Amino acid sequence: MILQALIEYAEREDLGDSDFHEVPVRWLIPLDGSGNLTGGPIELLDNPDAKKPKPRMLTRPFIEQKELTVASRPRAFFLCDTLERAVNYPDPKKPERAERREGSHTYFKQLLESAAGECLNDGPMARAILGFLNQPNALERLHALLTEQKAKPNDNITFRVSGHKLLESEELKQFWRRRRAADRPQVAGRKRFCLATGELAEPVSTTEKIKGVPGGLAVGTNLISFDKASFTSFGLQQGENASISAIAELKVRSALNDLIQRGLRQNEIVHLHWTRKKDDFDPFDLVETADEQGVRNLIDAPRTGEPQRLDARKYYAMSLSGNGGRIIVRDWLESTVPEVEQNVRQWFEDLAIVRPEGDPIRPIRKDFKLGYLLHSLVRDKLDELAPQVPTQLLYAALRGTSLPLSSLTAALRRQQIETDNKTNPARLALIKACLVRQDRFNQSKERNNMTESLNTESTDPAYLCGRLFSVFDRLQYLALGNVNAGVVERFYASASTTPALVMGRLFSNAQNHLAKVGGGVAENVRKDFEVISIQLGDRFPPSLDLEGQGRFALGYYHQRAEYRRLDAERREQAANSEPDTI
Image (cartoon, rainbow, N blue to C red; front, side):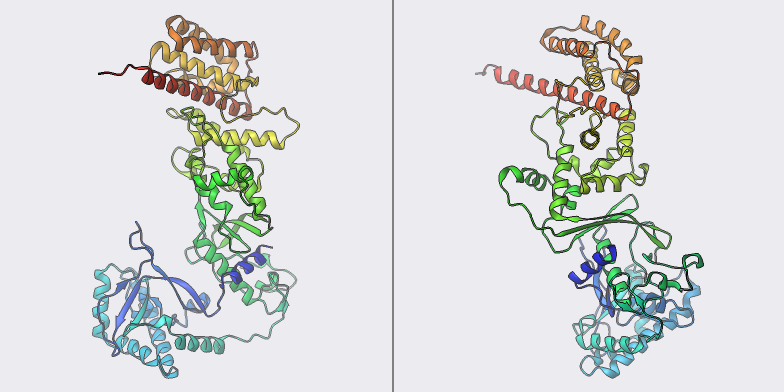
């Protein structure tokens, strides 16, 4: 089904022209009708204001990579190629390539000569380029200008003659199509059913490379490949073992190359997504960006009467990585737009959690974008995570399934070792979502009702232990102020895993702190201490499993957020009650 979905995308986007393809082109050489330079090389940039500007994508005549790399027959692309092949620009680091470079440059000129002879209207432009390339002094001057502008030998280059861009010439395009048709081999081999289309066709023996897959080779990777005898059977050769026609292979490759350019890259994996029909709404984008207005509209749609998407348009997502010369499909989703939309709505509702400041307004924030959630699990870089975690989280959001325990493990480990930020809202939101979904999809267990903000009705021992630990922290602050190594820094890890071993000692310290503090603020904390202690009784768990540690973390976070909310209220009341000064 993957191949069929990719072919549909290629047909929708009008991709898969076997005679032309898109490539990044960095330089344009301006010439007059006589083949003389009219200025220096012009740099073609997609966005000149970008931090690292990329070359402009242009469509050029296509030849197979295997044709280009035959050692005994140097070849080149027509009208647009690298500086090495098009203008014989040497790479000083690779002097051994001089002979091959000369051969490719000669072939580049031969193509121009053929076009000049066959094309009545635009042939003179091809002849002007040919005249320029045959002038050693002109080429030497161009090489100096390119060196001055720090051009690289593998940068792609094209030409403009008297204001006309040769890549846009319809007559030259038709010349190339005729030449490709004449050169295309007519193999009278065995026809087989194409796996992608079901049609009887001559299968390609090998497939072309797909560019830009993380972890793959620089020259590209293959989705379908047979480079070892162990991959073949029944006397079939190479691609006959997974037969795909040339046109189907081209469409699949073109679709992947296009989607990879726009994909989301994380941790050496690229995530692709598309719908069968073009649609302004894409749930994937909301998971990636957590756009505040977009998420709010999505969540509020059922309550506000916003029109719902009831059509079952197909929705696809695929994650790829490279392993040497082959592509690994990490995950694949085939669903519908309404179903994924509902799953993404549920994703943000499960993540919803009170702000660390205790703000009671339901938060829809950038903290919930996929990148922030993942970075809340690591100290510095995402490669600290198990490689499967980012993909598992993404597809849990798109499928509406439970979150992997590996993500909960990573969140709790980070929560324990974090020294100065145990109230990271992204990390706590992810912990909450893990617990909520565990409850939802595991009906045999008691539901613990992990809420967005403080749940004073919860009798779960782990949650109560987390609340009580926050009370200990608050009492210490009221009694001693800021200390270098307080309750949280010294005891959080052990209290969240083996509460029974720690809580007794913390109770003794709390009694001392209660004797030192006074006033209304302290009285409220004293009440929390008594209420939670009564609810817990002697039920301090000897140890907490992963889910219990998650509920402990939420109890601590919710209680701390509640204290911050009360502090803000008191400050506001004090400010409003101050008498006006004259």
